[in-house]
Length: 545
Image 1 (spheres, one colour):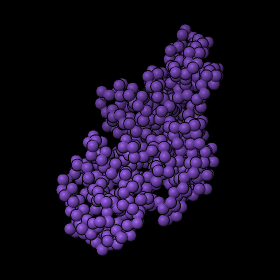
Image 2 (image 1 turned 90 degrees about the vertical axis):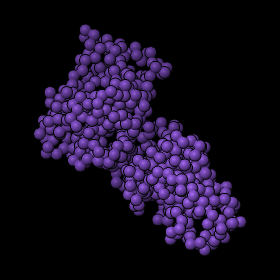
Image 3 (image 1 turned 45 degrees about the horizontal axis):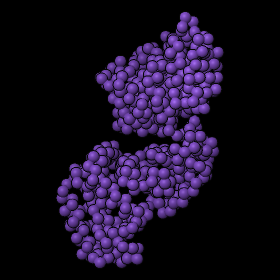
Image 4 (image 1 turned 45 degrees about the vertical axis):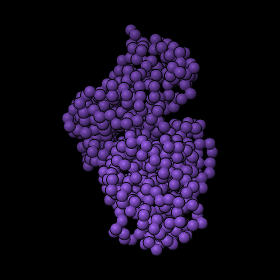
């Protein structure tokens, strides 16, 4: 991958003057051949921080005059670089023009879609200063994170650019072909010479991609249709080397847009094998599974065992001053307990409903930082975290992408811990609950507990070196908490479902059948999983009270 220093500076009024100087120089040779010469890109938006490089569009009336314009530009010291994978945009370079500001020069036909996007993006930011300010923030953060990698910098700001395109009506968020072009160029840094997208089945498309280096194959999933929903419970198989998707410029395994998700492969055969291993699907938006359930989740879900935190402090060195990422933090149950021992906790949670409850509960607590982000893209700085935790959440993640993200954000020697509260509720109660869910809930999946339904997932994550510790954590339910615990499940009915009242009544009857003096007390363990090493063996790996 090519690298280039990324430097963002405050906007300068001189940039417009330097553009006018360049424009006049071009007009002197191209007069009568061009419609207009436009200042586009970030330097054309007053107040917008930018790389100090002009973007200039030479607009021609039709393709018939292109060769003449090309020859005239050659006389001026420019050379043709082709379209660089962007259809309808011919790029020109130069060797040395010390009298002119550094610039990118493009030739576009006046009715081209690419020109429409250039002008529409510029005009939107000029008319909407709040969006321009946000774009500046995005660019500055991307430049800080990827200061030596222009491709990764471009990818990092692509989401925001797409948002503006959609606001300005410049792109259809469901158009697979148009978005595939953008993704391949801006996320994968490819020069695309040809793209042929075909619908494989409802919600799934495949694209043959031609580049100067050879062919590739792009899969595209539509996030909001029946195909995506039918595959929601599937887990992507990313631990098979021969079906690993090609990473984007910044290292992401899949590329997410608001309505589409993409994965790029070296060949169509690899893509087919990937689909076969995944039974045709890629897990879709798990971040919304608990929407509308945050309050009941906070009310019903238990804390983690006190013995867990004693062990983390004594054996692994967690304590006051530790910088922690609680990924998939939900309503902040683990976050709260980590804050109590003096850690600074970045609570990473993509679900707005869950995050809101955590912020209400913990917003005034010293050391608490709420982060709106996913496990696969936490938006935390490189090498900034001592310990990463995923409590009752890892089974919702893309494990390979999460692993790569952990490696990025952890300090040298940092650790990842996976935690679950594992119920030992009597079989007859478990069977009764399952029967009720199967009777009423079409969403039921993974009833017996997330990671247990996915053999080997933890072992693969920790490279076959799985350590395990158990801590007693008994829980007592009254009737309300027993019912609420069922309602907090991802697959539970909500009050908008048709048979919700009957569902509640059956859960209440089940509690009454087994309660003693209005309570049910069950054994439960908090289980800690980690990458085993000699240090970790100091702590007894089985039951710790």
